[in-house]
Every structure is written in C-alpha cells, then in structure tokens.
Image 1 (cartoon, one colour):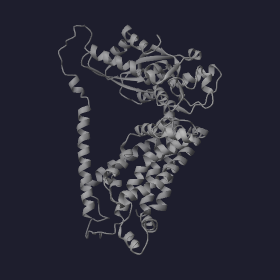
Image 2 (cartoon, each protein chain N blue to C red):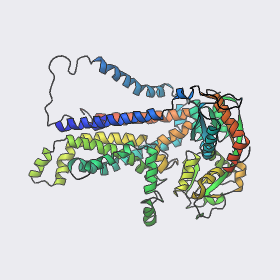
Image 3 (cartoon, rainbow over the protein chains, first blue to last red):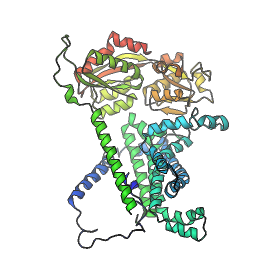
Image 4 (cartoon, each protein chain N blue to C red):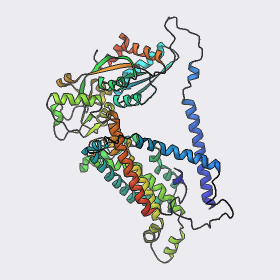
Length: 287
Length: 275
C-alpha cells in the first residue's frame, strides 16, 4: 500500500525539488542503523520464508507427473491470457481515469478517488457477488445485456477477465495517478502555449513522461489479476479450460491432493518471478 | 513539496486512526478465554461435569441451518458456553483440521472426507453416522426449464451447476449420473454445495444438483425436483470428536445433543434422513 501512496513512487527523481545530499559519513554507503536494520531483516525473512517452505517441501519427484496433465496447462494458459487481458482493459480504461483524477478539478473529486480504491479493500468474494448482482443474468445491467444482446457474462472466460479487471484496475489507477501528480505539469502547460490541444499534450508529452509509472502500475495490476481467486470463483464459476484459472485449480487440488496443489503453486510462482524479472530489466531500471 | 508533506501527514493521521479503530474492534470481538474459566457458582443441579467455554465445530456447509439451531439450544442448556461454527466444504474443513486447525468437533458430509481426518489420526474413536442426505434438483421458482428428471438436465440451453467432484455433493451427483448412464456438462463445478445453490438462487444458473436439505433451506427461492436415481447416491454424515480438541468435554456434550432425539428432530425438520 505505502508504495502506492508515495506520490511518484515509480516516477524517478522529482523535478520540482532539488535533492539535498547529505555530506559526510552515512549517506548511501554507510552502515545502516540497527533500529532500521533489525525490523527490515525480520520483514524480509517473514516474506521469504513461506516461499522457501513451498520450495523445500515441494514433491520434486512426482512433479513431472503432476505437471504433465492437460488441466494444469489449460489453467496456466487461461491464467496468463486472462490476466493479460484484464491488464489491457485496465490500461485502456484506467489511465484516462487516473488522468481525470490527477489533472482536473471538479466537486467530489476526492470522494470519487476514494470510491475508485474501494475494490482494493473489498473482500474479493464480495466483489464477485457485487459483479453478479450488476452483470449477472439477473443483474441490474446484466438483465438488459441478456435481453438485448443475448450476452451472459457469468461462467465465461470474459467473466474471468471482468472479475480480474475489477480487482486489478484500482492498483493501476492509483499508481498512475500518483505518478501524474508527481510529474511536472509545466511541460504540459508549455505544450499548450505552443498550441497543442489538451489531448495532444497528453498523448505527446504526458504519456512519455509517465510511462515508467504506467509500466509499474501494469505490472502490479497483472500480478494482482494473476493471483485473483475470490471474485473469479464467485462471478465466473469453475470450469476447466473456460474459467478455471490457476488459483482455482490450486484451491481445488488442495482438497484432495495437497502435493498437486504445491506443484501448481510452484508453477505459478515460477511464472510470476520470470515475468516480473523480465519486465524489471526492460522497464524499471532506475525506478 | 509542502503539498506532498501535508498529504503524507494526513495520510498517516487517517491510517493511524483507522488502525486504532481496527485494534479497538478486534479487542472487543476477541473472546477472552480467561473470563470463561472464572469460577461461576454451579447453578445446574445435574451431576454431570460443568461444561463451559468455547466449543468449535467444523461442519459441512449443508448442516448450516440445523446446526445453528442446535448450537443455540446447546448454549441455552449449558449457560456459559459458546458454540462457534466453521461451515464449509467438507474437504476444505478436513484439510484445515489435518493442518492443525484448533477444532473440537468435525461433522462431514461423507465418509470419504471424514477418512482424511481419521487417516491422519486426528480423531478420537470411530466416527458415528448421525444423519443421511439425499440429492435433489434445485430449479428456478416455477421451474421454467420444465425439469422433471435427471435426464432433463442434459438438455441443451440449460445452465446447470454441479458441485466439484472433490466435494461430497459433487461426488454423489456424479454417482447418480453414472448410475443412470448420463453425461452432463455443467457451466461450473462449484467449491461447495451452498455456492452451487446460490447460483440458482441468484438466477445465474437454471438448475443445480444439491441436497434435499439445501432446497428445504432455500425456501421459496428455488424449487425442488426429486429424482429416483438419488437413491443410488445417499450420503452418510459422520461426526467425530477431534484428538486435539481444546474443549473435549464440551465437544462430547455437543455430539450427544446431535445424536439425541431432540437433535434428530431438528435435523429431520431440515430434511435429513434418519441414519
């Protein structure tokens, strides 16, 4: 949460404030103070120990057998495709929303911003139920979708993408909004004085300026979508190949075959690490 | 710069206030065990050992309504006790019990899920079957899909949800389908019987294969359709005292209530069959 609250968390150095460099000892290369170092190490162990346990206790011998089933690959493929689609949806809709929240002033803007972050704190299962009530076959809007277009979203892959986008988009919006607030508006103003329209300024000046922030937000949203469980199983149900994503497969495997669940979790862990590492090299150097 | 400082400060204030509120709430809600064990004068004239404190019962989702009724009765019979329930899919519950969850009683919806717990030597004695449950089809009120048999569920254009095969209701449904040589492709395999029923209650699915008791509990929100093949797949419900029970005396008393005539009456009213 805190990394999202810091304006410009991923936007590199701020331009409107000269950095004060401390002279003398300490600084970047001295010994860190103990009151900071100890809790930091505890935090590190706390976060990494469960993952290590997963690797240590993994059934390495039976791993190949368990991962050779088609259901696993179906689930993994579905997970990757739907998480990517959910991130794309979040980008197309979320970046403009972040711009609206950061660059315009209208009554109730703060309130709206708080509302946008609600899905972050809502229990995912509740989010799933809310989606059913809104977009289900009998939902407030879903009723008309069904009546007019014959579209029903629950129990479909589209439903999975919607559930994931619902929980992942706020991450993107908040982190892009923070980046926008930290970015210097004078560049846009300069573009405007040179005759660029507001949209042109956004497209040609603002977007390149906040690209690292958007990238960081997308990675967050993608990771959140990949791990999404509650909203997905509630809104989209569980059907292998169509709506059974990796977390659902893990959950149901845990019921009768814990070893299989551990193997599946390892695959998910490996994929996440690979993707995050790949993106880090590409995007987030120096952020 | 000052703006961001102000913002951070406000954020911290808000976060601090929120954390304080949460702490206060959790302090209120945490049931203190110490107050339970305070020496209250024994008012009951019965010679049975005084039962007090919290009893934690892990029970299959399908037992929810009847067990909650029995829990209230138990608390009235034994003042100073509190029965806490954890309802869910039997397999999930079994997994958390073998994983060391502190529970006193386990009531499962099938011998197979009970075997997970007894197999790990986490139970005391042999589980006793206390009720049986039969499957029934739950359809939308008024039965617009004209479902009258199990075979009707295989009609195209009908959205059917089943329980996942890892869950007792799913295993039983599969058994009934196999017995009648039917192939049914549902739109979803739900994680427990209540969520399968919910999908019909919310009108997202047209039909679901659940227990008689669930149809009963849903009242007018769904319509039940009995089918003869359900006799091929009747589920026994075993109940057992757990080995690491923090409150074994209370657990035994609760199991006794479930098996008593009174308990059986409540369960029969909910639609369960006699063992």
